[in-house]
Image (cartoon, rainbow, N blue to C red; front, side, top):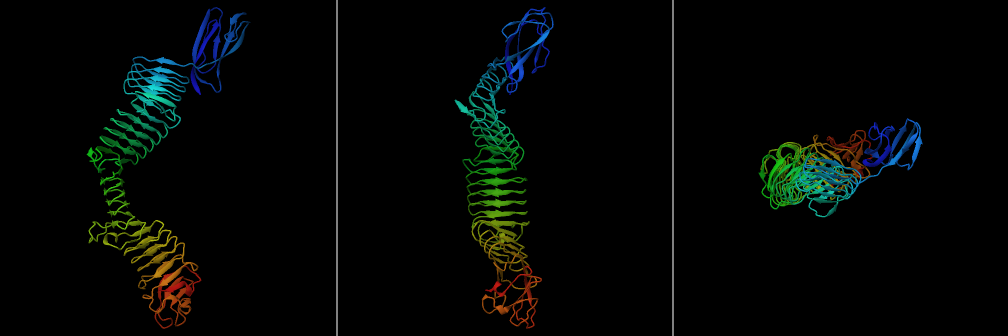
Length: 594
């Protein structure tokens, strides 16, 4: 560790000429024509670990004479030779007194005492239990490692932990000693401001006006009371102004800003930042499109700069986005969230909320309560978690509105849902079931993609060219009308054919398993079957056409085509109703008439 140290005194007989650079060996040329001199000095950047001493080279170039060499304890008669003396160094506490001007003092190892006195001083000590007195003026004080007393004195003073080797936790409101974790146990007196380390710090102000700067790291800064300036710096920070008229600056990173009461300025800085009103005492009304100060009602007056996201209170809030991609979270209460343009994410929270995405590809999640979700233009995703939720992919929420808002939209639901249940949802194309419980998912007249969860699902495509994905579990898949693609996935799946047969209604089963899966034939469609149950052996044929009068289902293993023949060899044309994987070992046991 490189430090500055006091050498002590060296007495020699002769004149001392010092020409060596700092931090290297000292070379002295002794001339007998001069009287004794006393030399002392400071060695800079001495490395205790590799060189705990300083070497003095003393050279005699004249006739023999007597000289006293410190550290050897005797007189020597030496002629024209060089003698080396090793002087071991010792650290001593430094005591420095400043002036009425702006002084800068820095010490390293030792229990040092620094007095700034007047002026805006910078006092910095290193390893050891140090005492720093700022005195009058706006001072900057850094105690370094060790258990330090840091007294700012008069003025607006700052304690600086930017050189700490680990994260610090500092509270300017504590009167006694406090464990800072990363920089020793310090006592802070008359300190108004704090600077954190390069790690994840926690800085807390007091009842006065404070300035807190987190620096690098994911910091948590609390202004408490007073008109504070709270700056996060780099990292994902949490800034809390507390009471008073505060200025919060997020800096770089994804920051969370709590202004609380007062007239506050919240500046998120770079990246995506959030203004939170979760502790507001009443409902808030916040609009990110407003650049001037705005009365939020329950949260005080706010000026929002570079804020992308909002978190509401526990009451009935109104939160509005702007032209950017916003995330609005209502929290408890019956909230109204308006994303406007941009690809927004809206979360209603508890309560019966209204979510309006506006233009853009929006995510709308009602969460608790019976929520109304309006996607607007763009490719929207609705998350449904209650049977009381309502989805509107129409231009209005009127029950008679049949105008598509536009985009390819999707519902993700943890409960059973029918995309054809009412007009508003009829313009949603896709559906994904989530959760662990079995549920049904029904499509509409559009080209749907319907995916099940890991449980047993009932998936139906209705009209359109649909794609059904059963996933894990024992699923029922029915394409309905249209040329559909059915994938059962893992489990024992049933593929159901219950819609009118035609050339436009030929479904493709992608993964039929003879061992696990079954094909169900609705006898109202397959009218040749008078009884229900497992298909008679004589009614099934393998080939390209019926060969007997009682053949009704024909499977061609070469092409995978599956036909229905109403009268076998009676002359009626067979009807193609499905394609399966090729070369399956199908039998009549793979079919059940229902």
